[in-house]
Structure formats: C-alpha cells, structure tokens
Image (cartoon, rainbow, N blue to C red; front, top):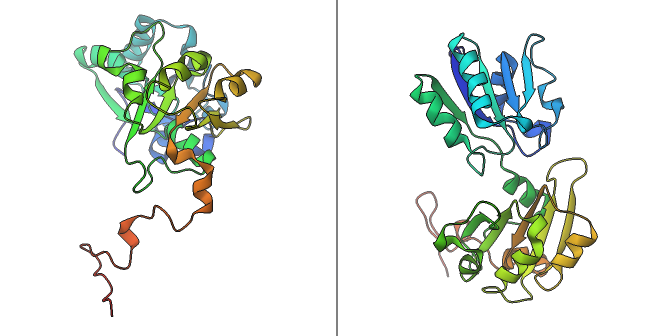
Length: 264
C-alpha cells in the first residue's frame, strides 16, 4: 500500500461484527493517527489493534464543522485520518457532505467500501434478495421522517413495484411504514426484521404486513433494525428446492463458458 499520510480515508467497517471489516480498512485503521467513528453504532473492539498513539473520538456528539476541522487538521499535518462509518458509507452515510469540503480544501479523500448491514441481515435470514422468476429488483430506502423524501420516492409509490424492498432507519416508524407498504403489497406479503445484524445480540422477527408491526413493538425494537419486505422472504420457498432456479447452472442452458448438454 502506498503511504496513507496526508489523506483522509472515509470508510465503512461493516455492520457490527468486527470480523466483517475488510482487509483494506483494517490496514488503514492500523496506520491511523486519528479515527472518528460513530459510537452509537460501532464497538470500540474494532480499534483494539490500532497503534497506541492513535487519537480515537466518538463523533456522535459532534457537528459536521467539528468533524471536518478534525480531519482537515490531521491530514494537513501529514497524519493518517480515518473517518469510520458502520456498514458502507455510501448508504445513508453522509460521506458526500464530508468529502466535498475536504477536497475543496485541497486534501485527497479515499473512499473504502464496507460490508453493508443489508447484506449482513440477508445472511442472517439465509434468504436471497433476488430469486429467479420471482423477484429480480431490490429497492433500498427508508421511511420519511424529519428528512423529507423526494416526491417520486414515497414509500407507497415504491411499494407498487412489489420488488424486494429493504427499509433502513425505519423501525421506530413501523406502523406508518406498514400502512404505506400496503398501498402496493398484499397484506400477506412476508416481512422480516433484523435487529443488530451480525452483532451478538442480533434478533430476527418474521411475519407479514398484517402482523409485523405488533411483533416489532412487542420486542421493543425502535432502532438498529432493517425491515425486509417481499416474496423472497417467504419461508415456504425453502421447501421447494427445485423451484425458481437460476438458468446459469441449468444443464440445458448454454452460455459463454459452457454448452448445454445435448438432449437425446
């Protein structure tokens, strides 16, 4: 790896399990002189192997100008500055508003992708987000809260596609979410909620649009959860191993790397 000094690294470090950080992100953390991370979402265990002289600050109580000042000061001093996000910073990570001012100040910013919680949740469920002949589109979105949604991205409108849909930042608004989802999905549509995907206290709740809100409230879950909606989460699919198979491995399907078997 080339010298990391004088750069700002904006990176995702995974959904919670410290083993789900990428090798590249681990190498940067081990070199870092300054680490800013969101303490409400990430464990300090991620930073156990950082060098003894590193400065580590929880950014949960900081404003954007304070974050930028810290990163700018470190990078201009030739230090390795790491802005650490949970999951992948390109999903609701606000890395654009951090990166642009830093680059405008003449600093080099490097973005390192991370394992998103959406994939950690799917792994916990042991469900595919896309199933051949059933659903081939995934919508990643959130409920409208204090931050408004663009007019053409209202949840009720997105629900009309009946694709696989994953809601971030919405467990505390589950009743409203269900009401809007019902504008497009049938009431019997399978729903799965994954709380703290990949963490020791991970929890999975399954149901349908008819009953999931009550189940989530009964578990007192209002944060740190993803809501998965769609036919892909129907547990009956697991009893039909010969249904909805990919054509890629079908013996009668030719592609660039394999010819179909000759039928007799």
